[in-house]
Image (cartoon, rainbow, N blue to C red):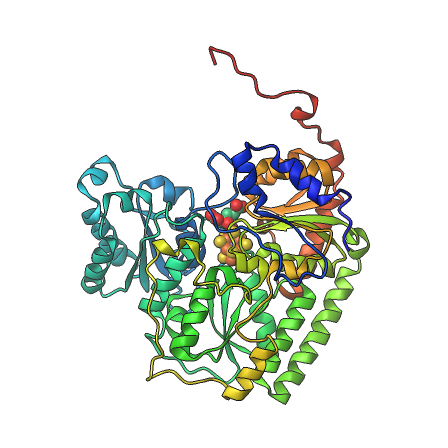
Length: 538
Ligand code: CFN
Ligand code: HCA
């Protein structure tokens, strides 16, 4: 049992009483005080609903989820943003998805910023011609492997048919052009964008090229190579003798998207952003999927053991065990210097749709205590566990998204496992199932979905955590209260944090933050008096 130092139920009442009654009622449903012994079935949380206007949220938009997160990392593609310049410029290189160009051509366009820069005239008379010209120029100048087009809000409002333009220009240029109707206003967060991106990848690219893959071949789904995480994951998998066919989408090229159906197992890291693709690949190609977590030393080892169990091969299992023993021993030696300074430190995590959960495991490896946690835009199943709600059917934002009708492809569907063995693995909870965040949060912890700035402020005042893990929109608000804030989106430009070497990097960075004398020296202007003044002439 965790001791947060306050009565959590009265804390929730106190926080929600800051809002007008109707808003308070809504926010109350997004907060759950965990009860001990509850396996996640009795308690419920509200999630994936529209943020109440006026509340300061950390969420992003549909365009962020599609272009920024899922499609943007493909390095040998040109990604064109169709819209006014701001959407492209302000999203330019803001995510730390690393990429190493491959092959002789070594194509890499990630440092560029491509936009149609729509003007008044295009909004009034339509922007299709301008988009066609932009694609033509990008194709002629760069000869990328493929081109993506991302619609921002005004494009949806004026009704440009970007799908028709993409089809026409694919024919004209001979380069695949994928158009995404990911206008920012769709859905309630970036989650809608993940769905739109996955559908198009599946529809246009997956299974269009062939590749020979070995018996122990996997795809890593939902790993975006932030801070180089995918490099560490690949290093360990390769050392174990496991072949990585494709990573969606970290350090990836277009070819990977097309040939991923040749792998024998899908490993799902970030379930929130990519469960759609995992399900569709299983239906069409017969590739089973399992949930893994490569964040945290013990989680990494546990995930490797799940893979060993799936492939059921004595030599592979022995090799995996020897890698685990060697890597854990090396990491533990390096961690010894930091552990005494981290043990017992309290933390709060408010990140995206999977990291707030994944990083709890790493913190516990280091002896730290996560007191409060929540996602920005995850769905109920990410909290409560997949067994409670099949995720695709409850996707509240799917009303904006055309669902793909997926059936088995008789040409290429081949069951990768003997059906009886598959069933056994499913019963053991290894395949197509996973636990939600709060299976890992016991009594004395609080779960808050889509946390707001004012709620964070209250949490700091009442619980005074040693560190908060969050993102750029609240990092400096938190630090002005004298609490260090570790960004778990871009790792504050550090990383990798995944796997064994990542655990050591994380421990080093968090140790340095927590033990910096700076926090005791800060004096916020709002500690000494009100900072906002307004007069009639202001
Ligand atoms: S890289 Fe992923 S891991 S894809 Fe998702 S839910 Fe975002 S961009 Mo920021 S860091 Fe974050 Fe996750 Fe999956 Fe990243 S926790 S919010 S949309 N996310
Ligand atoms: C996004 C991308 C983001 C933002 C990070 C943050 C990322 O949602 O638009 O809020 O710090 O990881 O880059 O999640």
